[in-house]
Amino acid sequence: METFLEEVNKKIDGVPIQRCYHCRKCTAGCPVASHMEYNPNKVVKMIQNGKREEVLKSSTIWLCLSCETCITRCPNQVDIARMMDVLRQMAIESGAGAREKNVLKFHKAFLAGIKRGGRINEPMMMAEYKLTSGDLFSDVLMAPGMFLKGKLSLLSPRTKDMKSLKSIFEKTKSI
Amino acid sequence: MKVSYYPGCSLHATGKEYDQSMKAVSRALGIELKEVEDWSCCGASSAHSTNFDLSIALSARNLIAAEKNAMDVMVPCAACFNRFKMAEHQLKANKELKSKIEGVVGAKYQGGIAIRNPIDIIYNEIGVDALAAKVAKQLAGLKPVSYYGCLLLRPPEVCEFENYENPYMLDKILGVLGADVRNWSYKTDCCGGSLAISKTKIVVGMVDKLMKAAKEAGANCVVTACPLCMANLDMRPSKKYKLPVFYFTELISLALGVEGAKDTFKSHIFDPQPLLRELKLI
Ligand code: SF4
Ligand code: SF4
Image 1 (cartoon, each protein chain N blue to C red):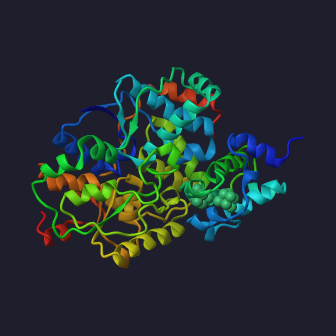
Image 2: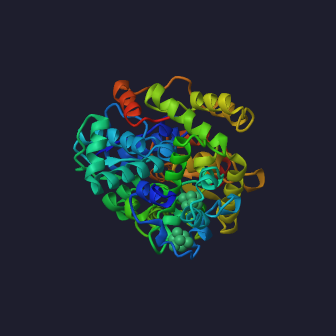
Image 3: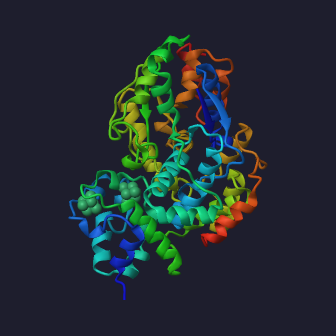
């Protein structure tokens, strides 16, 4: 059977993560390391040690902002940012879900917006996120301002060829 | 010069000022824009965070549509730019992936057009000397820090942006407009944009840190080329750290004396007009 490490490496499809020699440069530059349960380089170690469950159920993988500072600075080209993408996708596919529930709910609302109109209508997407997350109060003060300033509108132009988009979502088996 | 134009979703909503000022600046500098036919969302971080193939396919659909214009494509939104560059990088490096994605999108990807952000086009195609020659009003008294953020720069071998740890193109552009550009160490730090809505508390801390550093550098405003950074920096800092935030194109418009250059300032959340009035720039 494939080990957790082999599986992750196969999905990253680039530099194998065991090239990491734990210099912690990635963690030093990561803007959210202090909020993470496990530091970025710790996740590499955990994967090597087969800690599948702990990693996929951690908040770390959902707090990563994809700022790509880690891969930019790693002396061994270990692509931590891509690894985080892979781990999030594995967490979804394995049914482990997301420890940071609202982050995944946001992604779902965003992708639903693309499925609906090809382009994101920000107020509609936000409404969907707020309804599914129950996070009704954050940012609520800013929305009226945005409407008054003529920035947001409930109607915005959509992509015409929605058939092509529908097919992309189906063929990639997206959430 | 003539280029294809991919505005992306943000530039039609929260980033409307960027779209308006980008178009005005392009007219003034003789850059003709042709919008990509029937474009769709690039997928942004929600696609690549959840499904790799989806993220490449959504960007590829747009790149293929842009190829029909047979011109380089200008992508002002740093997030869309990043996703397009990543899709290009992956499709060119991996034949197997390319044929899989072509199957998903239902069309062939040629890879024959360059994906370019407007800082690069203005700096490298128009040039700072030509830009300086067009300045009608020096932005005297304006002390910006230039904020590049993540998505224009990283990963460097994908984005191919100059000096990715200490870039200067935007600084030079602002300099020839007559602004007193301040130096600071946070040009390429992340503002937290991708989690701004779902993890707001963490992100407010990140934004405050940036704005505090801008003030310490002696800046009276922050300049960006990303609609996500703009929304985040304009809306989320704590009260004591707020500063006006501009798209770089708004400041070019103002300096070139483009008609209607002032119009976009009204829709900022944190009103930059008092500062501009005080400096007699509007
Ligand atoms: S920067 Fe690279 S080598 Fe250093 S700890 Fe991080 S992943 Fe490992
Ligand atoms: S991409 Fe993720 S893990 Fe890497 S530095 Fe940014 S937030 Fe940290």
